[in-house]
Structure formats: C-alpha cells, structure tokens
Image (tube, rainbow, N blue to C red; front, side, top):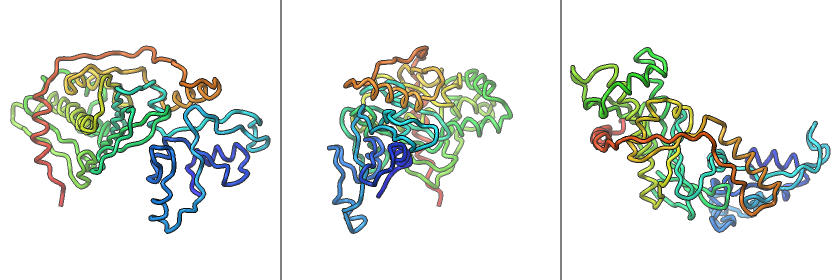
Amino acid sequence: GVALPHDWLTWRLAGATGLDTLVTDRSDASGTGYWSPTGEYRRDLLELALGRGDVALPRVVGPGESAGTTADGALDGVPGGILLGPGAGDNAAAALGLGMRPGDVALSIGTSGVVSAVTPRPTADASGLVNGFADATGAFLALGVTLNASRILDAVRGLLGVDHAELSRLALAASPGAEGLALVPFFEGERTPNRPDATAALHGMTLGSTTRENLARAAVEGLLCSLADGLDALREHGVEAQRVFLIGGGAQSEAVRRIAPAVLGTDVLVPPAGEYVADGAARQAAWVLSGADTPPDWGTQGTEVFSAEPTPHVRERYAQVRELTAPRI
C-alpha cells in the first residue's frame, strides 16, 4: 500500500482496520503522478513504473466529504465518533484558508517562493515550470516555484549589516531601478527558470550606483522580478490574475509590500500574518461538519491593499541581465 503521512494518521484515527480503508484527498492524490483529473487513479502508469497495477491505493475523498470517524481507543485521549476531514496538501490548504477562487493568485515569500493560482481546469506543462495539482474545493491549483525568496533579503541584509526594518528603509530611499543596479538572485541555483547550477550576479555597478540604498533596492526588485517570472509562466498557461495576494514571512517587509505593485504592475493584497494552512484545515473541518455543498465563507479581515505606479523598466532591465546568467559549468 501507498499512503502519505496525513493519510496514515487518518487511517490510525479511524481504527486502522485494513489497507482497504485508507483514504486520501484530491490535492495530495494529484501530486502522485498516477492520479487523473477525472478523479480516478491511472493504474496503467503504475504498471509501467512498478510492473504491476494491483497496488492498494487510498480511496480519494471528495471535497467537503467526511473521511470517516475516529474509532474508540484508536489513540490515547481521542474519543470515538469524531468526524474526520479529508485533509489537504499545504498549498491547497493555504488557498482554502485564504478563500482563494479562480482568478486569485498568491505569491508566498518564504525561504523559497511559490506562485499559486486556483483554476477551473487542470494545468499541464511539459517543461515542468508550472506544476498542476487539484485544490481542496473541487477546482485545481497551478504552481510555480522559485528556489530563492526571503533568503535573498537575508543575504543582502547580512552583507549590509542591517536588520529587516533598516533594509526596507534603505530600499525605499532608492529610486525604482536602483540607478541601473540589478541583482539576479540565483544564490542557490534556480528552478524558474530551470538553472539548478546557476549563481547570483550583480550587474550595473558604477561608482555612482553602488550605494547601500541601491543594493537594498536591487535585492527587493530582484526577488519580485523572480516571482513575476513565475507569475508569467502561469499566465502562459491561461491563468488569470484578477487578485494578487502577497503572503509569507517576506510579505512582512514594508519595502516588499510597497515595491511589489510597481514591479508586478497590479495592486497587491496583503492579509494579516497568520497560519493560512491551519486556517484552511479549520475551514475544511467546518465544511465537513456542516454537510454543505460549499465551504463556509469566512472572509479575510484586515487585508491591506497596496498600489503603486508600474515600473516596467525594472523588469525589462532584469530580463536583460537574467539572460546573461548562464548555468554554472
């Protein structure tokens, strides 16, 4: 049998009576490589990979459907008869927690960056830049990933010997484009574009442009241009970006919030800092408990909207120097 960790936990909570009682959810099933958007497993692919197709696989639970109930004595301290939700992968749960719908895109700035969009139809990209998954509501999720995100800010902050607040102040004190200073932030190689052995590069250094302010600005703009490349990859596959959310630890940077709409060319929405994956799990639990056809509409209170005059020249300059950064041999 094949099961993911949260599926194993659900199985244990339900009494672990046999492998035929394993269940999973659409979002995690869609990441296996042998699940079809029709909702069925591709056992022909399993047979090609393993030489056999008669493998015990979890039943895929529908969105909002109960995965069963807890069994008496299954785990210490857990009473029997409690409804179990289907669960979800982290990106699908975060989208549910944010209340994302088709037309919404989230830019998550953690150690790495994730650009995700809820779509009404599945996404397929033979190049591998865009990954297609199912979401936690019955729709689908398109993902683009960058290897470098908040670590870009950390690297330049450490180089300048400042804290995050001062890095933001320096970046906002510089003009858009940082007087031609441009950072291609492939510190750990890159996934979007696919250059695993590339290194970071700083371009446009002159005696006039090489200032602390411009270096801080170049770091923020390089981060955002990299994420914008991921968003472009999604758009090439039909994703519409009607609303753009900015989330994750890097979204707490004042400079990132204020420069993002200029680089992206659209308003950005910054919800209050929180655990969106946990919010999604709670929303799913409420949905299963209610028995409704759709998840409860909780809304996101306290979301801030940031606007700025677009600065297309920043992305144009970044695109020029990005193509000078070849994979390291």
